[in-house]
Amino acid sequence: MSTRRQLMASAAVLASALPMQGALAQAAASGAKQADFLFVQSSKGMTFDKATSKLSLTGVSPITVFFSDRPERVAGNMTTAVFVPFWSQGKDSFLKDNPNADISILDGGKLVQVVAVLEKPELNGDTLSYTVKVLQGEMPAKGADVSVFIDVIGMPLTPVSYAGVARRSYRRAVIYR
Image (cartoon, rainbow, N blue to C red; front, side, top):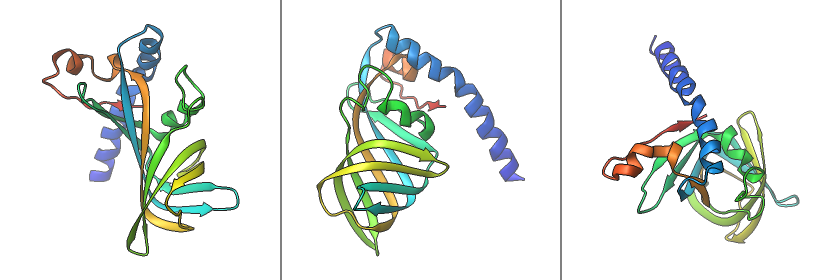
């Protein structure tokens, strides 16, 4: 019974977030105040094909978390499906300047950290793949419990937290769909 309640509550939250995606595009077009946001993705596992430099995050979370640094200190989340087009949409897209990422992986109970440039994301179900250029560290062939910390991109503040930014004493998290 609690699963049904959780599903209905989640559906209501996602439905209420639908207008936010349009608000984000409108705020970007209107020249609203910008902030630099960092992103975090997590997955249950990963595989890496060294020959093609393809990193596949398996069991990836459907939610990508984002947050900004001082002075805005805004946090929220969006669906991973909405995050992927950041490589192709907008004047400050990742396509023009691919982001760096810290990829933290458990490999046989040992934490492995790899710094890489992420390119060409592809989302298929719950598998998110990137072409990567490893800058530092050694990417294992497979691992579990993966966290990907992705470098900044500028986004408008207005739809994220117009009340929180105006008062700065109040933080607010928002779900993007």
